[in-house]
Length: 502
Image (cartoon, rainbow, N blue to C red):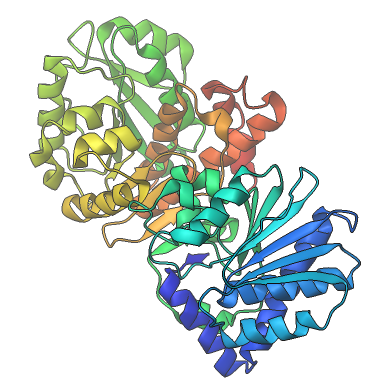
């Protein structure tokens, strides 16, 4: 699913109006009907509804919703803020329709605003401003937002919470943004919905189909995407009956230090559960027995050093290399990692301490082989690129890093994002908060390593790996919930997740 910036959304609307063809007022009516149905499905007609409408088309949507709710028997109160005496044409038209309805308590605010009494039983519909906003709210509108946020009512925002910008909110004023419990986004999500710091404003968001032309969506280029299951299924290779273990690649995992053998075990188990033919784990000598017992399916190559990775190894016989889980940051490990990366010729996935050591040796970034993947969480990315003030800025830096290093970056978190060297960003929708636990990233490294070894491109390995990792986590959540879920539970459900594609 494509995600377009706010200025392009207006172009999609305009194309639909011109080519369907449909009058803009009728497209607004279509949107209002979708919003009204979403409200009706969640709250019955005994729920008092107060709508706050702005002077633009977002306000026009709210006025149309008010009319449709009133026709369904809801008790409706409407405040239209028209402080400049200038409404958009469609907002004006809906205002005139609403004024003919005796059953609607309608107030047009030109100067003085007397706030209504809102209770916990109320639903507030926020239709003040839409996604076209490009500066923070101020003055009277900021005061209205603060009033809404201070109320005990349930808040529903139309398309986007008023005051929130569609993309970059780094210069926004947090107290001047509506904190919605629900956001009913029209046709497509907004980029800002996918950033952690905006969750308190967006609440639970849902897409409403309003019939924007599918042709123009298909034809319009985009840099941001929300991955769907239908995107993943065609990428997964079907296995031929006469295949053997050599058909599915030989992976090398360089992981673990003394006291951190568990990270290498988790990554190795996940790799073996993700279809790799052969896996060799290069680990400190003291971890040899642990790995042989915990993961009997793998071969272990013991490092000469007892406690850490200290000596690079030959990678000529491998199809892909994974480095990082539980690696530690010993001085010997740093030197060995740099040597390893400068001589390695097959695709590599770097995670955890490998990234932290790489942050101190950024010159190695440009020497990484084609199809290599970095999997930082936000703090690890900040060490590589410098601290960011917002998720939008961090994403921009990830794009720059992917281009500089010609690698694929998996920026981990809720809506983990795969960033390509061409600047395309794919947000992943699977997974849950139960996966915010030690070892979850090690499992992801093992999954992606298995895919790289099987010959998937860096982009496809990252997309598939992140999606299936989240799927397994969602299956584990059904059994264990979120509080009790751990990384081993994700591995437990990998065969079930992969089974959906066989």
